[in-house]
Amino acid sequence: MVFKSNLLCKKIGFIHLINNQLYKSKYLTVFKRLGSHSVLALIALIVIGGATRVMEAGLACPDWPLCYGSFLPFNHMNLRVFLEWFHRLDAFLVGILILFKFALSIIWKNEIPNWLPKTYSLLLFLVIVQGSFGALTVINLLDSYTVTGHLLIAFLLLITTISINQNLENDDLDEPLIWWRLLLFVPLSLSLIQSFIGVRLSSTWSAHICLSFNKQCLILNTHKLFAFPIAFSILLIIATSIYKRDLLNENWKYLSALFFLFFSQIALGVLSLKTNLNEPIFIIGHQLNASLFIAILTTLFFKNPLTKIGLNHSLSSQMVDVNS
Image 1 (cartoon, rainbow, N blue to C red):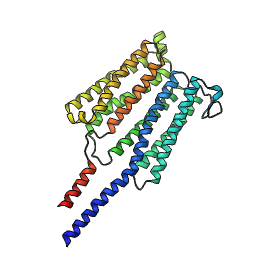
Image 2 (cartoon, helix red, strand yellow):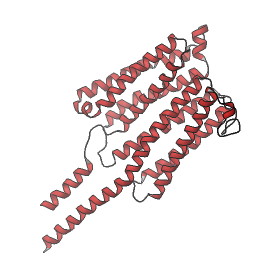
Image 3 (cartoon, rainbow, N blue to C red):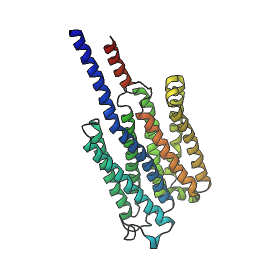
Image 4 (tube, rainbow, N blue to C red):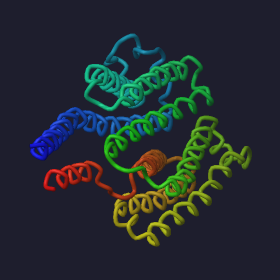
């Protein structure tokens, strides 16, 4: 009788585990999908911001948050006004999307991990700071430090969003390898620094002054110099993944994209300099590549490098207990 009672309890526990996991997955799937849309919207936001800077359209709308006093300035619309207006629209939509995710995390807080509402509150705070920096870029007439801070917050938003997505994927998985994360942290941090130097380069016109008059070349040379340690760290990551075959098998798509983006980034940088920064397509492509490069590095950093099934392990252990 006692044996039957224990068996019944284990079966009930097993069924409860399955129902609980399925119940949670329904809510988490919503956040995963919204998170994927957020990543794409943030990359678009960074690239459009870069295009706005390259096309000297940062002050095309002289007021903020409206443009020429209206939401849609038909009477003043041209390419530069459209870029600045669309950049603000994308930023507004990203803010609404993050606000929506934060509201859902509060409503469903009993059905999702405890860390999720707290992290979304951080995202919401970053959006507010990002909007403030956006206003200051207009008020301060494209001050270089303000523009650089604006990009910094955008990258923090992107990195935080990707970390949330990967943590949702890894919710039931073991912890990733610490040494692997340390390897990835080096090119990620260096790429962020290089991106900030790149913004300083364009927002202070140092590149044009250096190429035209051979003056103020320190920022340009520093920007180019950072390519060497990044190249070494990327090659070290790829060599390590080849040596640790499991890492390569699980992450080959990301690693291949990383390798391609790095060398295409160098090619776009060289082409930008060869054309004396007169071809916006190369500079915008350079910004897009940098955003994708940082996004992939961030994904690899927060992604569990080896697929280890946590849920299946729990279910299997329950099954063994029930069968025995």
